[in-house]
Image (cartoon, rainbow, N blue to C red; front, side, top):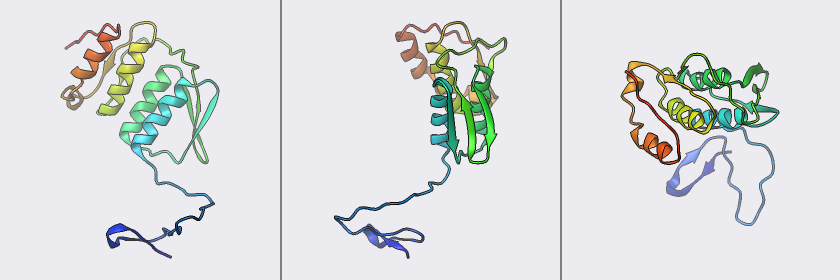
Length: 152
């Protein structure tokens, strides 16, 4: 049964719920790169285990996953998605820079995480990543006490 929405749009596999009634059941949302990045960061900072169900696997989300693993989170594959053992907010200080690859979202999240954590951390990525606008975020982080040094 297709749902009909404003503007006459028809969406297959969607259902109308008449006004005043309650919908019950489960809905499986499509994987989202944005949600996967954010869920990974939250799970990495949490204490204990988190299960990310149906994460979107892409170059960008794998870059975030890799950076968080270097910072101490343990991420493993599970039948339902990714199982994340969090750091409890205690991020490790890596010996080499975190590689954000070409992911601007990864770079921005790692800038904020590294600014909030004790110790020095470096970030690197592709030539494409160097062109991403992050000066405004750097200014805000510096206004909150972070020390940011631009290299290269």
